[in-house]
Length: 271
Image (cartoon, rainbow, N blue to C red):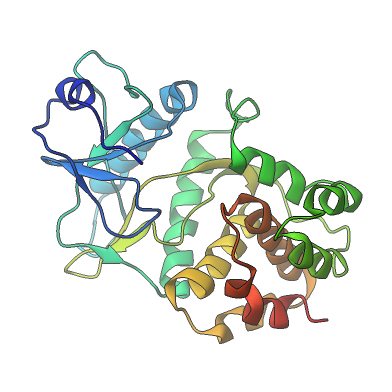
């Protein structure tokens, strides 16, 4: 992923050069006191960034706030008021943070965030259905009919993963959809005091249990959380949610490396 251009840095009023950030998908860059993230939709950020800014202030100004309570990285607009410049959005850099690899802490942070998002956004926002790209396609397939999944996976690295997961699918109500962070794993950070900080909200309009299942799966596969973290996701609603999460990853990962999912498959989609 190329670095942000001089025009992007100028409009966000930060000095260059921009330095790639470690962790995540490796595409975000730090410049001055901002983190710049690419591939953002201007239509989505036009409503999402103000909501996140409001939530961030609400957390910061909560009565009786403890230093280890949840924070949200503050979105920052460009000098012209735009939330996106050439596909880049910005938020405040959180110094001294590291990725939280603990599923319990990550899910607890997500629940607090999701409660605030539910209170702030009560109807499906515009723009989500119109997003392009691999994530939208993967979401559509993961929640669609099995025959569409299988057809799409034929001849691809996803085929074996999809076949295994599909055999365990049962029509199950996963609860009401709401605005959720669809990429919690790796985007819940811990500061030097151990306080969680949520960054880089990737919005989906799906049940909370699916966002949580995706976080647990990603923490196991990508961030070294123990395989035992999946033990509570092998039956009922949670099992169906993590199967949909697995299917989402099968279609969203580019390129997909099925071997990374082998141990998780043995727990949640045994042959």
